[in-house]
Image (cartoon, rainbow, N blue to C red; front, top):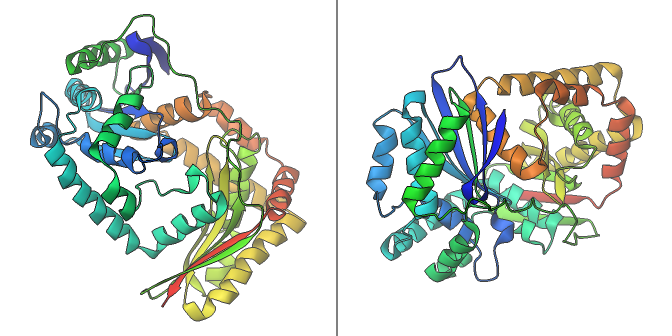
Length: 414
């Protein structure tokens, strides 16, 4: 991996993979839905859509055709703490991909007509989400855990905020955050660091960015807690016209850089990380009460959440909810045995190594590491950290989580 600071404070990270004929590139802005000011709610995700709608050099169709005609892919993703515009192309087409993405990020027009058209598209996207009980359950769970904080807001906004947010607010959000000292560029595959640096610098200049040579990157997001989470347990029931009940039981989790994050990975794997996990074996295999059941952990800079999920028949929801909590409490009370510990570590190791086979995964790892952790340990060191997790580490963390206010969410038939 190579890292350098380009003019304007743009950060560039690349990883060369000589055995592939492709390249993946991402342009990252370390700003997400939690960073939106009052009156700007929904702006981050709105921009994700609008940046594909044209620049002074290309209209929306030309942006789309640039990737289609070379068999490439371009897309974007918004989270609560960052936004990424990314592409995957043949290595020979990397100059085009960088030029188009840089043009979008640095030279977006944010045209008024396109703005109103895209408002309708986003409202349709939100409607699609509201037809998915799984998404509804996770949104409700985030609201339960994060309370009145910005982390509780839906990433894409709500129908109310999208209908009401004015174009001027989205433009203000763009001008405040889409700046050279915020931008992170990552590339992986058959790439050369020096060549990518030249391509990025030239492309940003063509798009109109003035990049001072002595500028420095903006500091990382602080991990000091700035939000207050609910101190009492809660229960939420959302009714929809659905066939199943979706259940989530969970609590406040770990911050991204919590030193126990590797123990959390093992704990979550033991509970609900695969077909041999406790939840899968107890709820699906032994009792036949659910098709899908798993555990999850989501970390943010200053807060996180941990949860157990299952989708089941409405008349079995009480039993399934009890089983989710029972398996969690059992782990907290009795810990893990040696076989479970070894199996979970092996599963994590395999996932880490297999994930490194793909240029896109490596590109994404570079970006997330630069934004979230500020470090990029070699794979061997990362595997060693997982191997160092002990049964006591897992048991202690499980007990800590079990002692926290517990939140239960159900999306159930009307």
